[in-house]
Structures are given as structure tokens and as C-alpha cells.
Image (cartoon, helix red, strand yellow):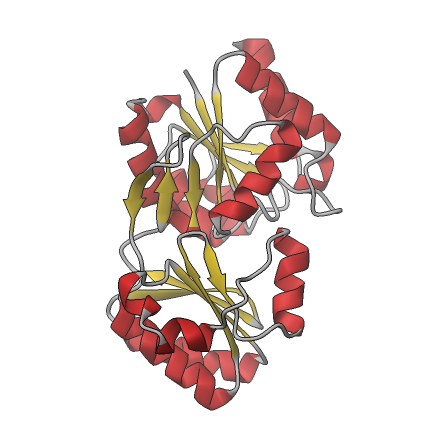
Amino acid sequence: MAVFCSDIDGTLLNSQRTISDRTIRAITAVRDAGHSFVLCSSRMPASLRALERLYDATDAPLVSYNGGLVLSAAGRVVSSTPIPADAARQIFDLCAGLGVHASFYASDDWYAWERDRWAEREISNTGVSPRSETAEYYVASGEIDSAPPHKIMCMGEPALIDLIEQLVVRLPDAVGYRSKATYLEIGNVRCDKGTGIRDLEADLGVAVSECYFFGDNYNDLPAFAAVGTAIAVANAQDAVLEAADVVTAGHHEDGVAQYLEEWLRGS
């Protein structure tokens, strides 16, 4: 059995921010042939499951939060590496002082700062809504201690995000990834997409040589090192293109589908 893992934004999704009909057909053909197709993203599990429903598959493993939470096909936790509560509190306090939106994601719960324009944008992008309880409730109630966050997303003006990034650099258990000038995604420093893929491989009992990964951005590089074949879409960052074993068409040209179709013809 081959295991195909894919990043979402900039890789699998097209210009309409959805999975094209061609890509749905290619994923379905791979699955019908007895192989697995796994979504691997910084998104929360509920958002990944919503995408899976587009190709009628919610029975695959998931690598969410950039490797911070890996789930089996049945929803069993394969590995979980949240941000320690003390570090998360420091980030919350700074965001509160700066007036920056911070969303806290713990397992499949999303605690937004408030239902502002930043939250609305994430709802539109991911198809998932936050809980009615806010990030302030999450911290003040002690939920942050019993269920520390797998991801914190800070969204605001670039100069303010710079200040939060400076704090994160000083926290030994946290790492930040600047996906945009106005976005900072924070996770546990001990996990990335590569650790998530390795946990998945061990749980499935598959060889590294049987695993493939599609990616486009810097946070996909650790996953490239964890699989037998690393595939970059043509729109990928230069460093990703250089690290790839194969380059397929860009995400607007259904590059993932193109590779899967060619692979099936040759298998």
C-alpha cells in the first residue's frame, strides 16, 4: 500500500480554494486501488474532515496542526504534542496587551479572540466555526491547563505580529511560522509535519519508501525528509522546489491530480 500525503493551501486546493473535480477523481482512483490519501496541514481536524467529504472519504488518518495532532482513520490519537500551558499563557497575555487577535486550537476545539474580521476570514477559509466560548474563557477557566493548545494563531498588523514573534523565539517549547505578514502560527517546537508523518508511518506499519508527500511551502520541508518521494507543485517556494524529488504542475493546474494519474498509469 502506498500512502500519499498532501499539504492543503497552495498545494491541493485550486484558485477557488477547493478541491477540483479532476483532483477528486484522482484521489478516488488512488483509494479505489487500495492506497491511502492523507491530508497534512496546519488546519484543525474538523476542517480536514470537511475537505475529505468532498471526495466521500472520512476514513483516512489525519496529520493536523503541522504534526501537533495525528489521528488514525478511526479517530484514535496517534500522537499529540500541544504547546505547554505556561507558554500559551504568555502568548495570550502579550496578545491581550497589544490588542492582537489570538485563536487557540485544542484538539478539535477552536477558541477565537472574538468573532471579528480575523475570525470571519478563518471561518470562510476553513469552513469551520469557533466555539461560542472565547479565548479569554479558555484561559480564565483553566481549560488551557487540562487541554493545552495544539496551535495558536495570531492575526494582526505586521508590526504587532513582529512583537509576538520576538516573544515566541524566546520560549523554549514554542515555535512560530509566519505564513503571511499578518499571520503567525505557533506550535510546539518538538513537532512539525515531518514528525507527524513519521508517527503516521509507524502507526500504519508502512515503509518510508511507500510514502509520498505533496507540498509548496517551507513548513513542508520536514515532511519531504520523512517520505520516500517528495513532490513539489510548480508554484512552490524555491527551497521547496530544490528539495523535491519530483516537480508537478502548479496547484491551479491540478498538479496533485496530474502526478496521481501518472503514478497510477505506471503502477
